[in-house]
Amino acid sequence: MKETELYLPVKSWLEGQGFEVKAEVGAADVVACRPGEDPVIVELKTGFSLTLLQQAIARQRLSDWVYVAVPRWKGKSAWRSFKANVGLCKRLGIGVMSVNLVDQSVHVHADPAEFRPRKSKPRKGALLKEFERRVGDPNLGGTNGKIVTGYLQEAERCLAYVVAHGPSRGAVVAKEAVAPAATAIMRDNHYGWFQKVDRGVYEASPEGLASLKS
Image (cartoon, rainbow, N blue to C red; front, side):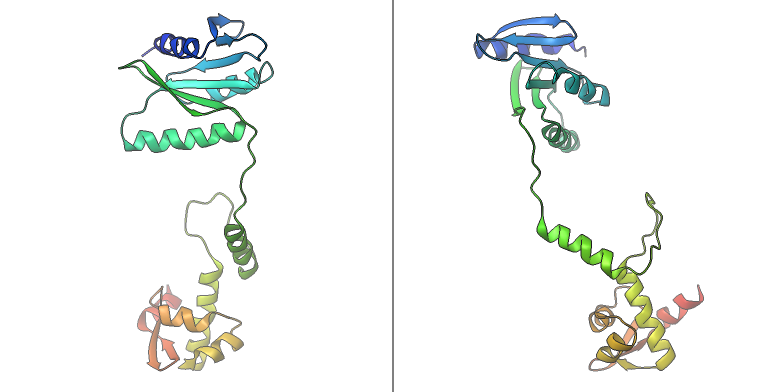
């Protein structure tokens, strides 16, 4: 596939919107003009790339109406990737077109616009909660390995307490081990470290004792 295969469908679509269209004007792949309006600039590529985004950002110095045009995706995996790239383009204020090379149709997935991300209060709250819950800084930024979370640290404090003191009530462990979620942690037993002795009372399981030796 060549970038030039995208040109005629894009040109035809723009002409249908009343634009006069010309290719390779200056550094731009496609320039479309209507009287009294900013030009529409379209960068053509056979797929999303950093180079494509850099070119589109450079064209924003010339017009607010900058699009990228790529071939229509095939398959679910390609759609997920395409959708993620559309989201990225929206954040950059870049429009996105896809071209179906079979029927020569063009679909606009996003128009250029200033992007203001919607903040998620629940996600922000969860982020700050985990930050406050975590003791110290036990991880290396950028790691792809096991992450030490605040939950894991709290579970480890619970385990250490019941190993030292024997079967204990969740409320006691919560206070003495500084583990506010002790009862839920031992009840849910996510790591397999605990076993129930009585209502609200837990002790270390064989797996929990073994984890201390590993």
